[in-house]
Image 1 (spheres, rainbow, N blue to C red):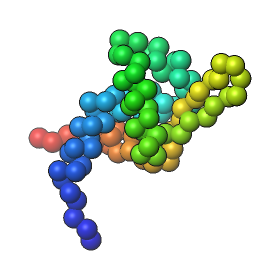
Image 2 (image 1 turned 120 degrees about the horizontal axis):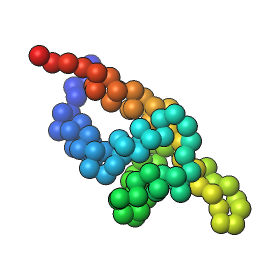
Image 3 (image 1 turned 90 degrees about the vertical axis):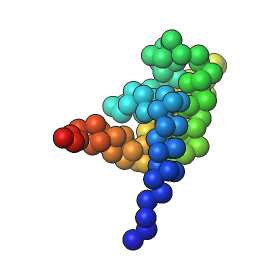
Length: 99
């Protein structure tokens, strides 16, 4: 059995939290979302930050992108199996109680 690198896990979780990753994954939890809808849902956050967060999620195989080739193109995001798994783990952590 391999040991967990606690520092790396903490760094990755903090990165997900600070860059709206968890919120974006949660927003996509029930269906595919159009980029316009994502930007609208996070309208109080600079759109470049949300787009950078989406790119990080894509690079880490947590979301996929689908593009409709019309003018202008419609861009859609949806969770991958890894994204669904991460989100399920986050929900599990949320439900834990330590007393």
